[in-house]
Image (tube, rainbow, N blue to C red):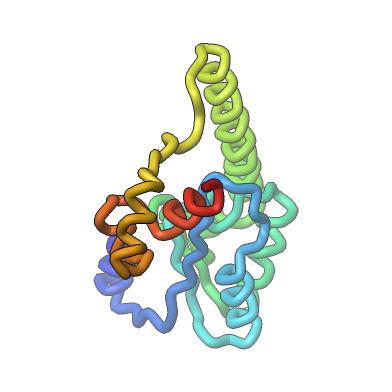
Length: 173
């Protein structure tokens, strides 16, 4: 984000709003900030969309990406920071180059998913336990501290666990 801000500043562009969806390792398909950005574009609330790379804008394949581009054709420019040839002012952006890059971005998403699944399967076969380590809570100590009148937050801090972990341990008790 900082590099995008610096780039915009060097270009003399004013950032009116930043749209950031943070989705990591999930199958979550909704991108509320992306949807807000598309709506704002249709309302002409800005005149340029700057993004890091095409795969940050869309990994949804050719048809969807070209559809997003069409949202910006009516006076809204767009530009990729790391792929400067992806610029509405560049004739290469139209057609085949964008289509090829869209297909590559979509394939990259598929490949990352397959590699992650294969890595998890390899780890399981090797006997590795996946997920967070189990946290042991001394429930007797919890009871003593509660009897002293301490609240759950204070107890959690003293035992170096989260309040949620503490509550789960108490429910199991």
